[in-house]
Amino acid sequence: MASSRSLAHVLLCILLLPAPAPPMAAALLFGGGKSTKAGLQDMEWRPATATWYGEADGDGSDGGACGYGTLVDVVPMKARVGSVSPVLFKDGEGCGACYKVKCLDHGICSRRAVTVIVTDECPGGMCGGGRTHFDLSGAAFSRMAVAGAGSRLRDRGQLSVVFRRTACKYGGKSIAFRVNEGSTNFWLSLLVEFEDGEGDLGSMQIKQPCPPRHVRRAECRHFLHPSSSLIASQSSFPDVSSARHRPLPTRRVQLITVALTSFPSVASEVFGVSRGGKQEAKDTWWWNDEVQRAIKEKKECFKRLHLDKSATNIEGYKIAKRAAKRAVSVAKGQTYDNLYQRLSTKEGEKDIYRMARIREQKTRDINQIKCIKDGETEIEEALKRMKSGKAMGHDSIPIEANSVEWLDMKHVWGATWCLVRGPLVGPFSVRLTTLSGRKTLTARDVIPKNWRPKATYTSRLNFDVSL
Image (cartoon, rainbow, N blue to C red; front, side, top):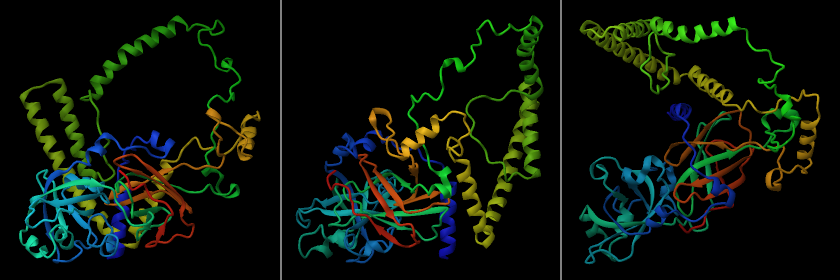
C-alpha cells in the first residue's frame, strides 16, 4: 500500500505543470522585508463560523490534508490544529498558517482567543459556498470557553466567531525538512515543519553542491561579466548594406516575389486555414488508429465547411466532431486504465524513473560549458580568475566559478513540495519564501549527502515571529 502511494505521488509530481515563480527580486537581495498591505490587513478581526470534530478533548484530524502526519498529536501542534474552508486553505498554500479565533458570547466564551494552526481542509457543508469556516479539534474548540464550560460550549455545535492572522510560534523549534517516503535521487519530496512567523510558503528551492571537476564538470555553471570583450569588435559581423555584397539578380528577385505572393494562397486552398488564436498543445501519444481516422475525418469536414458553408457541410462537420470526441474519450480512458495498472508493477516503477530522466534532460541548460575549443584564451583566463576568487562581476560582486543553480520545487499538496530531476547529489541547501510577505530564509547544507527517506533534518534557523 505504501509503495502504491509513493508511486502515485511520484507520478503526480512528474505530471505537474511548472508553476510560475513569485516575484522575489527584492526578497533575494535583502533577505525579506516588511509585510505587504494585504498582510497588514490580516491583523483585523473578521467574522466567521466554527464547529468541532473528533473526540471531545482530542487533537482533531489524523494528519490532515497538509501531510503533517503524527506531528498533530505532539507538542507544539497538539490541541492547536484545525481544518479550514477552501477560502483559507488556498489549495494547500495556507497550510501552516496560524490564526487566533474567539467566540463572542460572553456568557460562556472566554475573552481569550485560541491559536489554531491550519493542518487540514474541510470541504462542503458549512465550509462550502465561499464561506470562512473553522472546523477545530475538540480541545481547541473547548479552550474558547470560560473555565469549566467546555462541554456546554461543545454542545452548541456551531458558533459565530471572529478571527485574525497571527504569527506562528513553535517555542524554540527550528525549521525542519522531512524527506517523504519513496524519495530517490531522481524524485525528491520534502515536507516543511515548524515554520515560525507567517507559516505559509510561496516557493521552495533547493541547491546541490557543484560536483568535483573530474566527476561532472558540466553540471557547474560558469558566469562571465556581460561586458566581457570576447567579441573583438562589431566588424566581426558582416554588414549586409556594404558595397562588398553584390545586389541580387533581377531574375532572382522576381522569383522571390512570385513565391511570396503565390505560395500562401495555394497552401490555403490545399491545406485549409486554421481558426487562428492560441491553441494549447494536446497529448497525442495515446491516439490509436480509430482516433486518428476520426480526427482526420473531422479535419476534412472542416476544410469542406471552410470552402462551402452549406447546411450539408455544417451537419457533416457536427457529426464528425461528435464522433471524434467519442473516439478520443474511449481511447483515453482505456489508455489511462492500462497506465494505472502498469504503475502498480515493477516495470511501471522503472517507467517513472525513465520519465524523470527524460524530463531532466529536456530542461537542461544548453548554455552550460562542456568544453573550450576557441583559439583565444579569454574564456580560460576568466575561469582561472573565478576559481582563484579574483574575478569581479557587475558592481564589483565576486563571481562564483563553481556555483550551481537553485532548482524550483513544485507544490504538490499541503506542505509537500517535490522535484523531478536527477541524479540529485547532496548535501542540499534549501531556500524558502513566504507567501504573504515574501520573506526568504536559506538553510545551507541542511539535508546531508547520505540522506534517506522518512528522515527529518532540522536546520538552525527560523523566520522572524512577527508578521
